[in-house]
Image: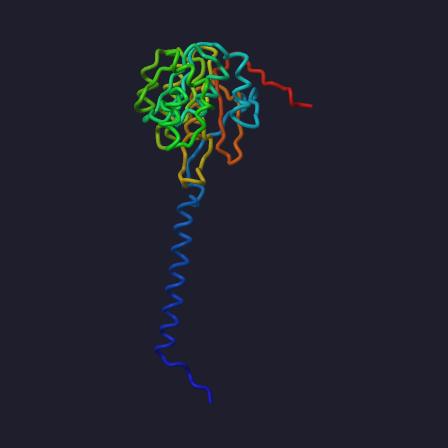
Length: 265
């Protein structure tokens, strides 16, 4: 003869199932928040870039090849500016590629890049613990620093950009704070500091950082800038394996850039 399970057992089973369902729903909710899966209409409204601002754009395999497209017109041309320098890895590439008369390095904390710019032995002492960097890979940065051709600015990105003379830079590369209003403010300031014929590059041209799980506002800032400034255009998009792309813009009156074609059929 079959017996019904005790009432207490049935209630406990239902309670356990309800608790597991609650945990499952909570997990989906938290994942939805971290993945930014809110309804489309609740997400940022990012304006499209107009066709006439894209007709001269070119895609490159990475940001280093992107620089090579600018080399012919910018090499030796005045001042380059880097906003957000980290340990100076890209700084070295910029200096090596463009050989500017001087290079401005702006960061909220310049200790890491300053260490990279020291002579090799001092660099090894100061740098290895934090970045484990090969100090021999900063030769251009070190040479420029030793020759007094680097201007250091420690502070907020907007303050550093504001300190520059108007229309003084041939290339401004922005890789600082990627959230909130910072990218928009940096871009508007950079536009007043770039010289005629100069360009502005922005790092991390991506909507969502899938590592840090943070919504970036670089794309929103750049699209809004181009919508408000129809005399500017996109000329280069440097791809990144994980979509942390780079993008370069210039005034339409600037000369068109020619990319190396040695590997094209």
